[in-house]
Amino acid sequence: MTTIDTDPDTGLEPLEFAVTRNLAAKSTADRDAILASPGFGQSFTDHMVDICWSVRGGWHRPRVSPYGPISLDPAAAVLHYGQEIFEGIKAYRHADGSVHTFRPDQNGRRLQRSARRLALPELPVPYFLQSLRELIAVDGAWVPSGDDQSLYLRPFMFAKEAFLGVRPAHKVAYYLIASPAGAYFKGGVKPVSIWLSEDYSRAGKGGTGAAKTGGNYAASLLPQSEAYENECDQVVFLDQDRNVEELGGMNVVFVYKDGTIVTPQSDSILEGITRDSLLQLARDRGHHVEGRNVSLTEWREGVASGDIVEVFACGTAAVVTPIGTLKGRDFIDEQPSGTLAFELREELTNIQYGRAEDKHGWLYRLDA
Ligand SMILES: *Cc1c(COP(=O)(O)O)cnc(C)c1O
Image (tube, rainbow, N blue to C red; front, side, top):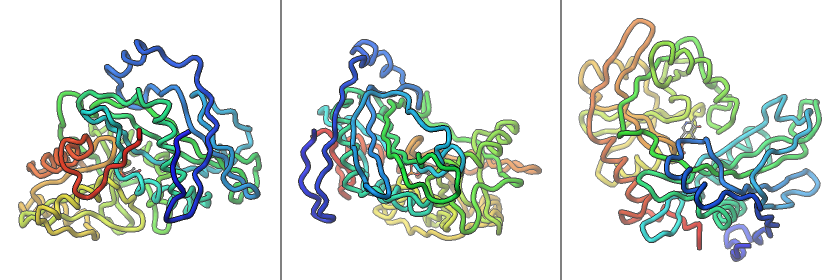
């Protein structure tokens, strides 16, 4: 068990995780073979963490167990009504071998905001942090050390009560699994083409757009297929007033000629931690940053007039992706290419991998 002192902010005692080692853990050779070329989300480490929650017992039975299938009652509410949330965060290996993650308190707090919207219980942030440390304590060897490689951590929570009535579940499970991840773009970062979704939206006013919940992703799959049919990599969504929202899983950022950086902000957009961090780095460089509505018209006219000089998408998995083309039913707009996205990407990843000074105190050590 990892020892952590009582949390100074919440007064919470750390949980005592029951650890069951995986007797069929991968051999070093098998693990190394996976880490040599991990892809994304395909292989998983030897262990997982889970914590139960019930109305009566609160958070209880914290465990570290061998990774494997979960047994679920067929009437479990999540399978019927989609009461589910998740997070995505990476662990990075530094040159000295130590393992760090990036702003995990932000992910912990966002998991709580998502929980509130989905009527799920809020996992205290100290428990969230402890779950990350517990998993690294047994699976630390799974954090790869190659260029742009990381261990992708996937915390998630779902309604497991067997009950077909429609109300917030009285029994919930929190889990954490981990998957080694390679460089998102093989052979360097390439600009992506974006399909403008006109017929479908991912979220509505007052809906669940700002929560990290599976339903938003389910809603994005058909428009994403439409993007593929139109030879585009990703899809961008608009709100009911034709303002730009975001891609299926990445935020959008516009760079203007005068150095101003603008990003769509509304209660139907997920607040990305990558975006927040990149914008902070941009502010550090003297850029003026605005979170506000950006209409499709402002985007298209800005590109046409040369007012907008760069457009990029960002999120934990791919970090930063320049947008090369915006394609709609009856237009194709080539996007201007600049260097700021690449520079900010470099600056951010240098901090994450311990190659640059962590001025904002964003790193959190997981293996000590
Ligand atoms: C997770 C996610 C993002 C990116 O958030 P990060 O914290 O930067 O990883 C953006 N949009 C959606 C819909 C997401 O689910």
